[in-house]
Length: 248
Image 1: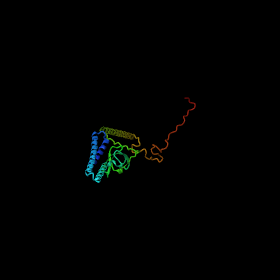
Image 2: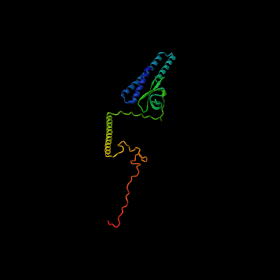
Image 3: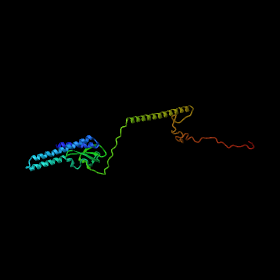
Image 4: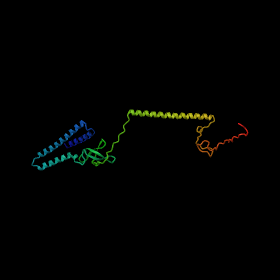
């Protein structure tokens, strides 16, 4: 019967854990009530069996009756070992996460065995639970900060995918139009250069000569057209002289 009680307690722990996520679930509430009743009935049956065995041994065998009473008390203590530890179901505590840091958590159930208990905990701010040994628990720290879970990035809907696809295609069309425009301008500039070349006009950059090439004149400057040629000569004009005695 003790093994049955332990099974019922483990089942009750998982039901309590499920109720934290869905407190209004009628099926879980009904199952919890039935499990509590089974645990109480089984515990009472164990106590009655122990009392009947002690009574059958006879009043004269006081030492045996006393021994049976002790065994019954030990059995009762063993069946309630989850309530005698430092940490119990419903308590707040600090639990060690896999990153080695301690975070606020709540104990929802105590499972395992009396020699190797496991504590079902839920980190505050999260909904998933896990089982940890007592070495991963510490007393609750009220000043500890509750971490905020990171929201998962939602997958885009089909409509959003289509919208992004259309936007990308439109961008590609614009880039192609710009490239064609640059190509047309370059072609027009080449045609202009060829016409100018036929008329004897040389335009730098269209005949393979760059305006930034080193000039032949050592005194010339790069990028300055006509640099190093000196000042352009021009004929000076004299002052206008009026002839004397001539009337205008």
